[in-house]
Length: 344
Image (cartoon, rainbow, N blue to C red; front, side, top):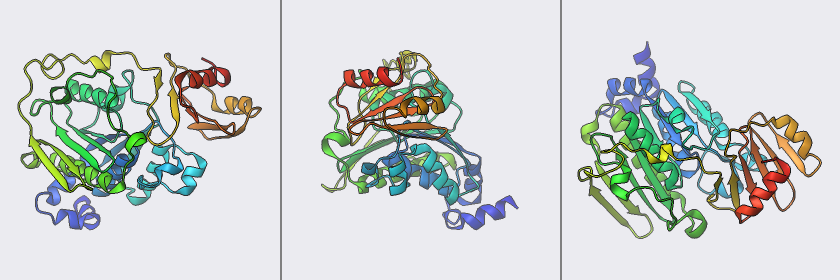
């Protein structure tokens, strides 16, 4: 009966010979975590859930805003108006597309304290983030626990992707060096992004993930792929060998995992938003905070988050004490607002 159900829903995928019935059954047993439910994450999750991956964990720290709608395909205007959590809305849309898949959400900011809890129990980790700090965390977890992961990045009209397999390919540190937490990378804030490059990079990531999960590892690209849809450029550079002196995959020094979680994250793609995260695990009562903040601005809340609108500035507060401070440019102002209304 199980085989009939698989063929019925996934008949066109099963007809693709490298997958077939056996590959489809392997997908049903597979577990995937997607880090980031923005532009890449929405495209990645839609393809993986519709392909029949049995378990998908959606991890995201952010809420939906109007500037997301140009490229983040699972969300609509009503979601943005309500300022709902991306992971929550994505899960609703994806469950409606395929109820056979178990979808779990984590409305969290991936950091050194929770990365292993969120990522170490799956078959593949898929990168839908927009910053290298989190990618180095993913790489540490992947190497430490021998889990393949799919790297993807898209900005402006260009993107890069690679599928890393610990023990078989170099790791992220081999390719780009140790994490120095430095800037200098293009972001959506500085150069923008168009939707076509997002879809193409996500499709490459999903294709590599499906190859691995269906037992077709011999077909993996084993390369770093770069493309620019506006300039009509495409390059694929084959992996070399792992660097003998690599501190991560050779010496097994997981510096991103052993570092302290940052108290502040500044870069949010496409708007003036600064994240404040307490250095200690501060839990808050959202209903109680809603009552307190109602004296200062319009408040909306649900079990996952609270949104308070002060006019020119807004605060989105999560149950773990993390907050997004909207309408500010500098860390001092963000911390001041957090201390004033939430308490440090």
